[in-house]
Amino acid sequence: NVAVTSGKVSVTAVAENLTLGSTLGKNVAETSAKFIEDTNEIQLVNFVPGDFVKFDLRIKNESTVTVNYRTIIQKVADTGLFGGLNVTIGNETYGGNLKYSPWSTILPGSADVIVPVVISLPESAGVAYMAKSCTISYMVEAVQGNASLVEAPTNADQLQAAINAVKNGETITLTDDVTGNVTLTEKVGLHYTIDGAGKTMNGKITITPLSDESDNRRITIKGINFVNTAD
Image 1 (spheres, helix red, strand yellow):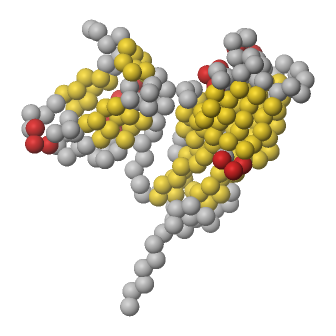
Image 2 (tube, rainbow, N blue to C red):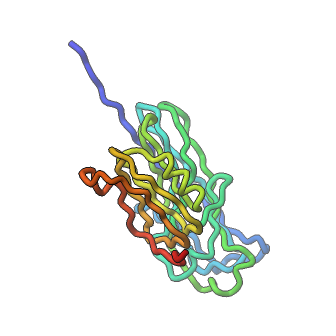
Image 3 (cartoon, one colour):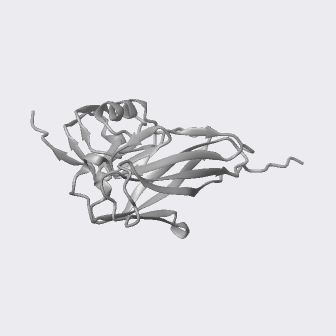
């Protein structure tokens, strides 16, 4: 007899060690930041320029195989605060309404990984974001270690690099507005999607098509708001 046991991918993120403060040294008694543990969310209320909240994401790996993972921070609800915030995951600061950290690898049986997160309203933000609030979700995305990975592009060079490296069946999702032009070349057997997720592209996507219409709809482009596309 041959016994075959399937592998398990199970990675979770738990938020802890929340600290609220101000780079201006002011009293933050009127500022609120709290975890909503049931939905993996953090709610920010009454942020003013200079305010920040720090917390750790404890990445727990209960997988039986090597996995690749990345942390994701995204807007859930907003009255106008989120657009002014800086979000730092580890040592990288991200823009846009959806923040992805780079992919990392974790082995089965590894100790928990601690990922520091800082959400701040810069001192230079002015009064436009005062008296606003938002709710932000945090999560971890994990895939089997041998799965293909597509980084989320945030500019035209990264988008072009993702297009050049894309594999059949993958989706490239924009996480920020893009300025610049990119080119696509259709290839037989290569079907993929570029999902703008409602972001704006100030530029053009030029497609070099194949004449073989029997393999149609090779590339799907959706959810992008184009501006300034004239030559």
